[in-house]
Image 1 (cartoon, helix red, strand yellow):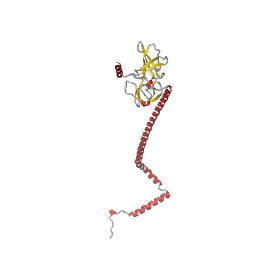
Image 2: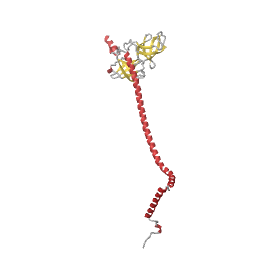
Image 3: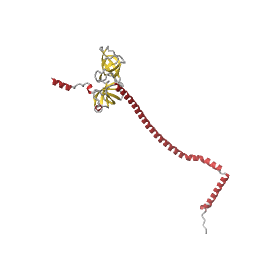
Image 4: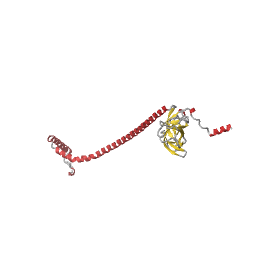
Length: 297
């Protein structure tokens, strides 16, 4: 007795029959399409209908590629920006150093020209810093006792007298500028030859002639030079130019002088290494002077 599946489970032709049928059908379509090109229009229509779907399916991929490319460009631009900033800083630093070297070279040339005009042995010193005292005008130089510097030696720049060495250390020294209120220097007016003493001025960058008589022949624009009477500063070094002549009292006139030295704008100075015996002897200390008087008495 043969058993057959109930009607509910009947599935039609067998799988092998269906595979054979569809294979023959596909081969037939391939032959017809290759010989008669009958399915070309159908393929075009299906491609046209499916094109929007294809584009929609490609949107996530395009967005991912665009985002990846954007992030890569941002990172690349950041790296290039950082490199450009580094190069800009390096170029700016090199430019500043070049300008500074050019300025120092020019100052050295001017100092060498000034050294040739003076017969005294000299040495070039660099300004390290200003002193902290706001009521004095002093600079610290990079030359000291080991370089032959002693207290009292004059200091000049390429334009004229800058000051005088007042303190000396083994590797550095301190110069008091002519504009310091406690500074004095014997001068003479180049035009007339009249001698006087210049004091540090009350205004920054100036010196003064305080005790000239009212009939003294001095006028604005006169050039002051060292007189050489102190035996320290060589005669004829430029000191400054008269900028104003004021009547201080009935007996004297006050002359304001702009200094020739440009100590505010230079880093290189020239120390005149005068011999120790040529320098004036320092004043005796009060205690030592009193002891000498007691011994004499």
